[in-house]
Length: 319
Image 1 (cartoon, helix red, strand yellow):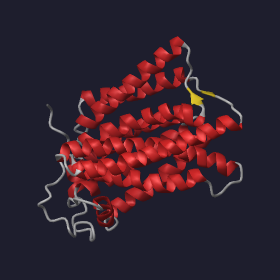
Image 2: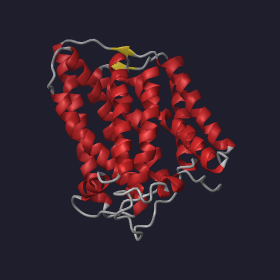
Image 3: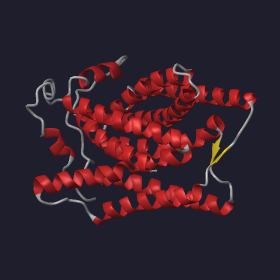
């Protein structure tokens, strides 16, 4: 659990930096928009720093998945928003002498932590053992889930061009969340193959395709709208997808005891409610800059190093 929480902390810092860079990037439309956006982000120092921090968090997350169960470790990533809240609050105190965080935000953070504790205590995960036939079915489930997530991301990218910015952001965020949820299962499978001495395996190849696609889809979601539109869908759906697919794909299940199931439902509901409130009311809840602004050189040099971080950390107006 400690590794999962440390990973969530690192990924929280990465998300703040990535959204700050992606939300200020010029809009890219049409076929290949995601690739063009990635090309622009590769020239932004804040985005690259976010990727380095994110890679560290991903490595820690992979180790946590290898040592634990997906159905328990994956929900820990929801604490990213709590760590983001603490990070943004610390930066606000440093710059303005106050945190600018209201009671609702801290209540939402308590919901996330409390829901996570209740869920973890009542999870009691079990691992179903099976023979070669069962293993083959599970591998087919995992490969099919990865393919479905990839198709969904491509379709969301194409359909999103026909939608308004807000709806496009939500659609892309849902597709990214599905990809991230399956990515976690692929990471778990990669660890199992490495433990068996297989350095090159099909889960690794599938991850090499789906993970970059999920990353690009998430960046497009951040670019298309405010973080309040994209982040709730990503943070809430990612663990749900992972927990749902972990059963048929990895044989990992939560306890089916009625009392424990009730605790799991209450904990997960509190967790998701806290995530949505944090994402919609948090200090990161700002409108992205207008595409009419000049962004061409804002991060190629560090001339505007603090501009978007200032916007990102400005407390959201009440109501």
